[in-house]
Image (cartoon, rainbow, N blue to C red; front, side):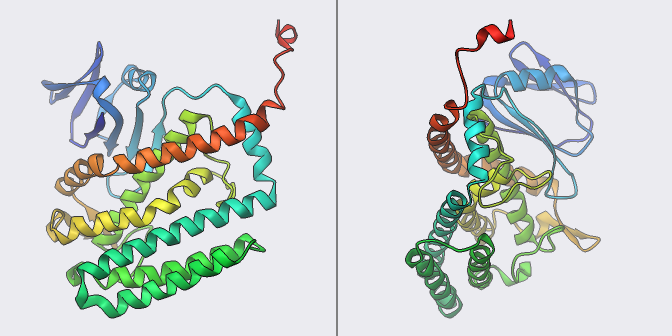
Length: 329
């Protein structure tokens, strides 16, 4: 199972049996068995396909993602067949309005995120002795904030918890900036649009991780829009935002490796209108590497989502009756 990237001008995709046939300028270029695909990413607006292709992919449980050509943002996503157990969503909605439960969930999400940030900083310390001072300072700050969360039985408000997370993030990215190649101009996190190659890669990777979390939520019966730490907001899959927080630092380390080893290089990027862009050659490299690197993160997301769904299902079933079948006849 892997990722299918459609990123060519004048490309046409047709469903032929259990395969996708790829045509370029009317000439058949090859086929891809649908059984080998777990996600399809389409960059830009020049790829042509019909609803039959989308239906084939959805029936096979393959999500199709439409990405902006010039930005690292998702335009739309077509998901596969949804889970039919409404009891999970019912219980999830009840938990969203349970402030005490949300505080506990949010605290554990942030603790897990900061624990991973510490591991990344420790890994970098072992590899980059020349950056010992900024990395040690960052690690000390993140450890201190993490310890306050361990010693506090309950955070009084989500805003205060977000403040702690933000302070840790500032220190963490300061440490990360010290080991990035200076030529890339990375001084910390920026987005919408990202203005340097590191932030382009971070934004694209976080977007792909978020899409995987949305797909996983739907597959196990969770509502991706009903989050507990990231509160429900118009147009935002808040639960997916919750789930990916502990994985962000692992993604950051992967991005560092891509750039450190020059798997992605400066000439894969360009600048236009105060935005940094990843070119077609760079996107091909990125998605090829992502397809393999993201497998353990996908497994982690599925395990976490399934555990949450199991926890919620019992509560939700209390609100559902199996004795009212006559009422719908």
